[in-house]
Length: 283
Image (cartoon, rainbow, N blue to C red):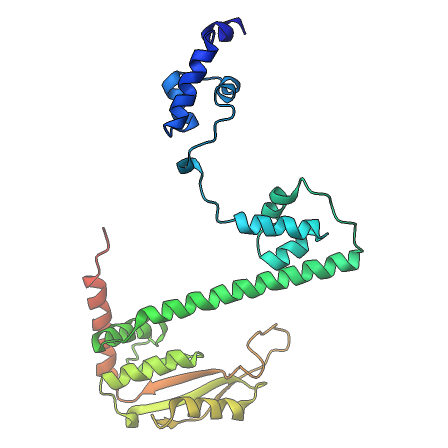
């Protein structure tokens, strides 16, 4: 204490300098460094009554939310109710209103109902954000050039299509998928490669416990007049498994086979490895 007293013996002179610097627009940190005042209590006394310069006042985007949260708290609203109305976190609400009186306790049922509505509102907000993100991403694609569709189709087939194995050198183009959008892109790719509709043969693969006629109708509608349909393949139903692909939206898979496609298969394999060779693997 003696050292501090001696260091700031000329307090009034030091205060005059501190006030002058403050009125020039310096911040507390700048004044502290300029005057070598490392004691916060002394610095507070030196600047007592002097407002900070405008440039040091940072705008807070949550000021309006904070003010509204305090209004709601004074009306007797709980944290859950305030969160439901304002959409901000309970942690922020707690910081903003902790000095205000607590509202009277509610029944457990009322509290649960309020919390449930708050969670439902949170889920709705998250879902809206998810959908907006997907819409924004879809808009980034724009139109697709033929070369882009060509490269996409090669990768799509090599990821999802049937491939020859060392033990089974069957070179035939067959693509099977349950996603109608994948089937649609694959058919567009085949058209780009000048594969005629007469070369295409479709087969539905589906569990026998599903609505088979509806699935066949669904896939015929999806492909239009692109080719002909062969016999549907039924998968045995195992009642002991907890299968998720059921219900009205389950249509099984569609296999797209290209007849007389050995040469096309070899070209697809070559295109794929051409892509691999052309891809820079290091930065």
